[in-house]
Length: 146
Image 1 (tube, rainbow, N blue to C red):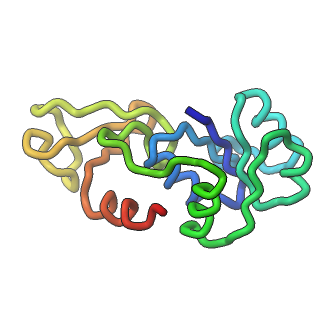
Image 2: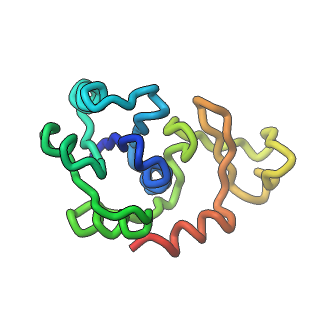
């Protein structure tokens, strides 16, 4: 599966791609903003750069230049270049930090705002500890995917 790096202008897109199961780094999460550093990170980690910066795209092999500002339009642009966009049956990536998710046991503890894992599947990010479940946000994202 393709691994992406979203530049500083595409933080919201990074979250959508993570929900679709893609390993998607976000430049600002890595403390990287300068074009040269973004290019270096792309090459070092073997990622496909997603950017709205035409100059950066031209200098980065395999980069995908997006022209739209709105995330739904950006998702359509990605679909049009062959990126498959759908939510997996089992969530795999943390929308916040890109960490991997693990299922919380039925008797496992969860925050007060999370459903009981005995009745609703809940996942926890192994990196940041964020909890996820398929609620209204999941349905909202699904409805926005092209």
